[in-house]
Image (cartoon, rainbow, N blue to C red; front, side, top):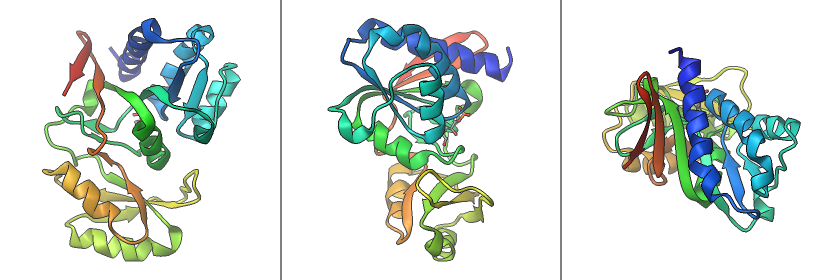
Length: 223
Ligand SMILES: O=C[C@H](O)[C@H](O)[C@H](O)COP(=O)(O)O
């Protein structure tokens, strides 16, 4: 199977996972990226079964609206039943690296509001130890050099993601060569650097369920 076919299979599995539990007033949080895009396309097939969505990026909001799926502001909903999103890496504890598409901050906010966070990923994302994928860090633009120097002190090699401005108007540093043995501690340490908005380690709020697309089928994994 191709990587896209694995992504489609895991996105389809997410629909199968959530649809029996959707109610007329359910709000679904929707992530960002190529795997989440497949999920959005399949979500359109069940759009009569729930109230609407909250999107983690402008791009996902546009795709949802193009399917006629209602998109609400996070501040106008009472809660989010499910949050479905992809990842750049996941470890067996379902701690993640996210932000390859620069949507990490809004993703982390929507995940924090969700009763259940369902991660959808093909098995190329499965790792024992996080950090092979360069860690995205969203920074206030004027603090970019300051934050980069602090990231070097933490053992990483930050690289400015040229030409990318997040939906929040900020910059992204991708941090190479981090071996993330203690994800929660590093998530906190990076977020404590002045000028950092957030970083792409999702350890304080890991996924609850991972639907992992493999060549032998989609595996349902809980931490
Ligand atoms: O900022 C983007 C997100 O964190 C994505 O969920 C992540 O990069 C995975 O994207 P994809 O499904 O395209 O591999």
